[in-house]
Image (tube, rainbow, N blue to C red):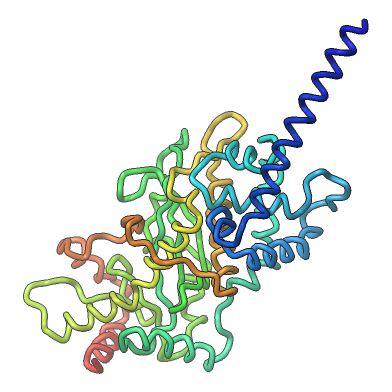
Length: 364
């Protein structure tokens, strides 16, 4: 009997020692110097503290109070940000923070649920409500290269995922299963609107189906527009490049150059998001209980990363643009004549849209 008690006691002691060791490892992560902290968590220490306070403020809206749990709210935010900003697995994030994988999973989804609350997203995904605010956006875009009256730029960001069992509709134009994320971006790389769809849905279709796209006529003031790549249809609200044909006038070529330079903020924002939140650089592997691809969870991972991107942009906590990540958009090659020529054809297109584009062209 004493042998059994001693063995049990030793087992509990060993488990306690392992937990203490893991805990010391986590504390060492938090207490690193500022440069190492930023490398570990992808943001400045002050930004991390702000995110913790934001999550704490909204925590009761979706979670029970933490109470005397061994892992504080700071611990839960830390493991979530670590998970999103690294290419490793949830097991790696749990180990780095002295948690079991089960606990880390629970904490990550608790924090993600807070970040995706309407009360949080409403604050960090705002569209202008006055003509003055819209004009301020267009003035900031015009500073880039002189392109006028553009308030926002739109495009898609592809995030590769594990193939779902029911894979139809998930394969993107680049022939891998993906989530296609509509990004509506201002000149400061702030995402003003996002929409996550299966990869088989094109950028043009996503705009048509999204709430932003359905309400675009009512959203934009007269004389203002957004810009998109050549896959989108030309309209009074969305200005796209001239189809690449031979010959093209010098004015049309100049317009396309200015338009594409201005629209590039979408790709740059995508690069910033993926550079900071490195989990998006690898195929997402969240699974359901029966082992299928958890596409809803994958969309939540992407959305929470974009929420954090906006929060950090708002705090002026920036990352350098990394073009080495390659093309992750669903945009067709602008040098592919057949695709681009067709992109500008829309039976419902108002002739005024063509006139508007010509007017912008003639101003430059």
